[in-house]
Each structure stands twice: as structure tokens, then as C-alpha cells.
Length: 349
Ligand code: NAD
Ligand code: TYD
Image (tube, rainbow, N blue to C red; front, side, top):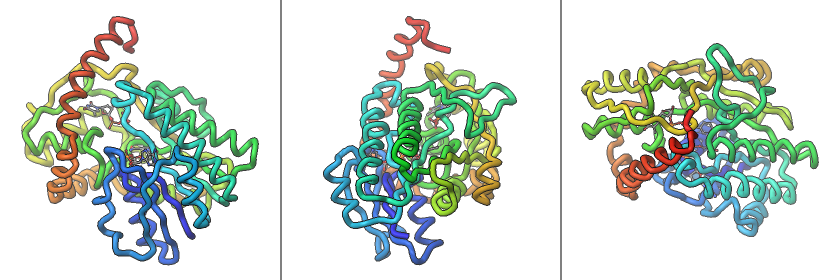
């Protein structure tokens, strides 16, 4: 297959490109990425010299640029590009609407004009909102997003559905739980715990730390997207989860034990406004139709993640040198102000 991957310089996109090139010798990939703060070409050093791989810088919301890239001709598009951090979306949602909604609409329209035969939209479990204890979402569950990030992803997800219903646009939607593994930007919880612990810095745990996420090893997600691309039915949605439901506090404690760092680094801070309590998915459809199943236990994946971040301290330093530390300070100051405002309006759950 000749693939266009968007957002391939980010965490999951870069893992996906390496995954595909290693497993499908006949495939080639063009990676279209704007290189925002979370896009990093270092993530792709392993495939830089591969003649089947090419990088093109561009914004998915720039119609002219997208049409030019598509004029090279592709069999399929796998669309990862997005603004992805919930906390940033709480501080300012505009880039989320611009890229996740406007960008996805622009990309799908251009793909339709170019008569692309297959388009995988990488959506998220966060579109379903928070699960009650014992509840799990199926692909038919209603969408009830609670953060500006999740709402922008739900908008993209619904636009994809509309393009299928209206134009028979050959889209397949995937909704996955929280990923972890190599190359994840250290604003997300697991790499944040790792990088803060390595530097002996305090680790912010939101609220009481009892929110539950279902953590999936990034390569298991890549295998799911690959299966959806090759075997998924047009117009269908597929959930991917790992059944690894752990409260945040336990994850952080476990990582500190692996690193032999003191538990006293954990610092409870005020909760995120609108914080989803739990995410959990039924995945029988993807297991039955795509023959997909997660393979990596959380213990094994965390061990590998800890090893990767420990032996790639220069990658973390590089990412942090690109303004992350300054962002982090500003982010926490602004976060306090936003929380105060939300509390004043009774907006906190
Ligand atoms: P990331 O933030 O690490 O990477 C996003 C990438 O998109 C970056 O390389 C960035 O430069 C690029 N990008 C952003 N705006 C762009 C634009 N306008 N045009 C072109 N490129 C642009 O994100 P990630 O964690 O790798 O997530 C990838 C996708 O998977 C997203 O769509 C996200 O919603 C989805 N997802 C993520 C998770 C998770 O746990 N991380 C779980 C489920 C679904
Ligand atoms: P995150 O990695 O931001 O993913 P998401 O919000 O998309 O699930 O956060 C994972 C969980 O960790 C979430 O419940 C919020 C929590 N969290 C903290 O407790 N402290 C932090 O500093 C961050 C970034 C997240």
C-alpha cells in the first residue's frame, strides 16, 4: 500500500510508521506533519534512511497544501494529526477546533476529491465521556465528551460518519484507550511521572488520583489501526482497549518503585475541571472482525517504557529544551487561575 500518514512525527504516528515499515515490506509512507510542539522528527530516526519513507511538512487544515500532497496518489490515508492534550484544551481550545475539526474536514474533503479508497480516522475513547463503575462502552454507545479536546475529537468523529452517510466516503473510525510507550511527549501522565521522577521533582497527582484509565501499549494500538486499515469495513467504528484498568495513583506508585524513587515525590494537586473518572471499552467487535487483540501486559509494557525513557534521557532533554519546562511553569500558573474560575462558576465535578 502507498500510505499518507498525518501526524506521523507525534507519539503514536511515529510508532505506527515504524510498525508498518517493519511489517509490510511492500508499503511506502509519506508523513504529513505540521511539527507542532509535540511533533519531533527525532522519533523517526530509525526510518530516516528508508527509501519507502518520506517526510512532508504541512498543516492538514491548509487545503492547497493537502491537495498538492495528495496529487502524488495514495491508496489510503491514516489520520493521526491532532492537538491531543486535555489540559491544554482546558486552557485554550482554539487550536483543537482548528486542527481536530477544521483540519479533519479539510483533509476528508481533499481525500474525497482525490478519490482515496480508504481513510482511517484515529479517534479516541474520550468521545464516550466518563464510564460509570462496571460500565463499558461499545461502538454504539452515545458520544458524551467532557473536555474541549474530547469534544473536538467527537466533532471529527461525527463529521467522518456524516461523510460516509452523505458521500459514501470510505472512512473507518478507531477509538482507543490511553496509550503509553516510547516517544510519548512528557506532558502526558506516564512520561511525566518518569521525567519528573528522574529529575527528583514532585509529581502532580490530580484530585485523589483515583481516576481510572485503561492503558494500552502503543504497539498494540498500532496493530489495531493496521488491522482496521486492511480489514475494517467502511463506515464502521472499532474500539481498542487493553483491559488494563488502573487508578492513576497506583500507576505512579508502581513506576516510582520500578525506578527506586521515593513515594514522597507524589504531590496531590487540585483536580482537573470536568475530569473523567473512568474510561473502559468493549472490544469484541475489533477482536471478532479484525482478529485483533492486545498482546502486552501493563507490567511488561511499563518495564519497557521505564527502560526506554531511562536509556533515552537525551530525547527527553531535547524535548524539554524546546520550551517544555517554561511551558510547564506557565501551564501550572494558568491552570491555578482556570481552576479558580471554574470553581467560582461551580463548574467543577
Ligand atoms: P501527539 O500530540 O504526540 O502527536 C500529534 C502530531 O500531530 C504531532 O506530530 C503534531 O505535529 C501533528 N499535528 C498537530 N496539528 C497538526 C496539523 N494541523 N497538521 C499536521 N500535523 C499536525 O499525539 P498522539 O498521542 O500521538 O495522538 C495521535 C492521535 O491518536 C490523535 O488523533 C489522538 O487524538 C489519538 N489518540 C491518542 C491516544 C493517546 O493515548 N495518546 C489515545 C487514543 C487516540
Ligand atoms: P493524560 O495523560 O493527560 O491523559 P487523558 O487525560 O487524556 O486521559 O492523563 C491521564 C490521567 O492522569 C488523567 O486522569 C489525568 C491524570 N494526570 C495527573 O494526575 N497529573 C498530571 O500531571 C497529568 C498530566 C495527568
